[in-house]
Image (cartoon, rainbow, N blue to C red; front, side, top):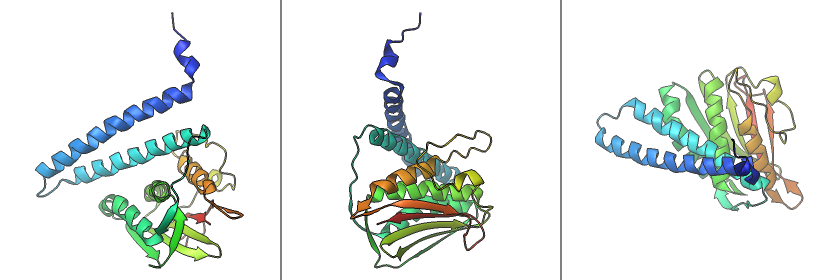
Amino acid sequence: MFNTHMLSIGFPAILASSVHDIKNSLTTLRVLLGQLEKIHQDPRPTEFRQLEFETNRMNNSLMQLLTLYKIDLSQFSLAIDEHSASDILEDIVAQQSTLLSLSNIQLITECHGDLFCYCDSSLISNALCTLVNNAQRYCFSKILLSAAQEDDYVVFCIEDDGKGFPENLLSSDYKQLPQVNLANGNTGLGLFFAETIAQLHVQSDKRGFIVTDNNSQFGGARFKLYLP
């Protein structure tokens, strides 16, 4: 007979525990991959670079799930500090550029060196990395990653030359849990996470938010993250 006692602790808690286990296994996998790369240095097979990218992408996704779980339980707080916007962009480029070059996709960055913002840089970087990765899947050949000052906000922007966001991802309400579309693999989870994290950034009477549209200067999708 099936024992329902374990379910009494709640499925979200079981899921969070499983995610922790997966992250531990993924950490081991990344260490082993690093050891193999040292053995095969000259030349390093392109498969290693793709494996490194995919493990980083999985790690980012697991981090997002755990963060959302802790936020739901009111057990999460931001690590706010002053950060250079250009440093955040450089971190994203370091994680994304290798596979983008393998796919012949140009990643362009634009940012004034003296632009600073108050944020949890690891979460902002995580959110933007996920959305750059999504842009890579749907663009044709070009992605622009930029940061600029707009009134009282620092705005991180991702633009591409693809077909643009589908209609269901142009909604202004990102607070609802996304609906999984197994046909195209587009869940909207990255946008949901980005909006959730943006909303946690508050300064005076202003709160962070995101905007999606198809007004990219390259004719495709445009994502903007506003931090007060």
